[in-house]
Image (cartoon, rainbow, N blue to C red):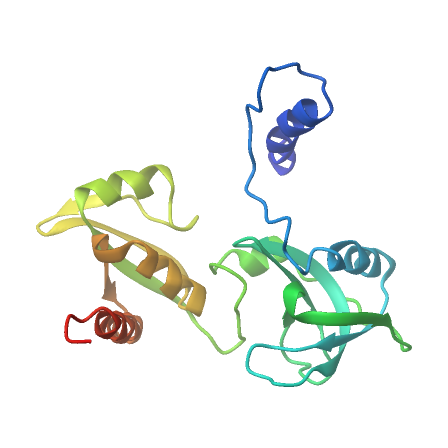
Amino acid sequence: MPQFEWTNEIIPLLESKMGLVQTETEVITFESNPDYVGLPHVPVLFNAIANKRVLKITYRDFKSSVAYDVELHPYHLRQYNSRWFVFGYNPVYPDRVQTLALDRIEKIEEATGKYKSADTNWDDYFSDMIGVTKFNAEPVEIILLITDAEQAAYIQTKPIHQTQKQIRQVENGFETSIRVIANYELENLILSFGERIKVLSPNELKERIRQRVNALHKHYSLQQ
């Protein structure tokens, strides 16, 4: 069944690590970060979600010099780019889902109060985005991209997003599109392809990418 296809990735690892399959050397490796500081929070948050517990989380974001407390009704855990994130309800921001990075959490305590349940379909929640950053006011947009032949072959076998349209050849390269929220993670992904991919539209995203490329060029300018 499609919802259990993820076990196809785990079973070979378990067989190898538990000695069920004998090999002279390691034959499979998964991407992991054993030094990730947020990892110990995963079982605590998982149990809080499973048992519907309200939490008081001491949190220090990248912009704050001091930690502060967050009341969180945790709903979902997600790993992205070798980092873990928890999603839940924060009464301070009742109109949106609160997202916290586990490596920025300093302490977790169980809090008093009634747990506020949610019926969010998390597959649907993440279906129109890349990464974890999502705000209610952000629209879903069609992102039109153009790439060279080599990169086109790469993204044909490894799509940028599940909404990626069939790649077609045009005068200046190969064109495709995705339908997502133009968030920061999307910008980073596009920039990771370097000069091989260009944003054609929307203009707002194209301009943000242009500004970041110009800033990058200044870092590596021969005049520096």
